[in-house]
Image: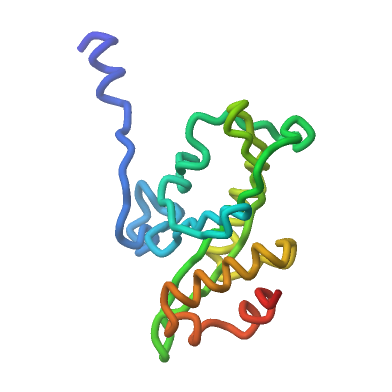
Length: 172
């Protein structure tokens, strides 16, 4: 076997795991995150709207496309404010509910094709949402109201089954 074919054979292919990767088999994929129950909600603060954009899971939402991001907010002084809110859904004895909700700030100046976001914060807040934490206290009142209205209108039963902590933190 020549070196070229040997290298091709040893490369592993990326695998998307839909089932529980921690079921005890102890092979490839153990410890990976299951993103089946998390959705990114984008809040457009100026237009007072919220929408789900699954592209945000890979930093490819409509808001993020064709934008070069910087970790310095000062470099985007004329940017429009947005939030990416990671929402995890779970079920309990009452039914489905919003189990984890964590918001991350983002600023985009479309004309200059520049934006601000803290990538580490986005990753950490997605992890917190997956761990059923509520992290929305740092949001402004207007954005909290937009998110609350969106979650209520999306599914009133899920909102009613959600924790009092979420409801209290989203009170504007």
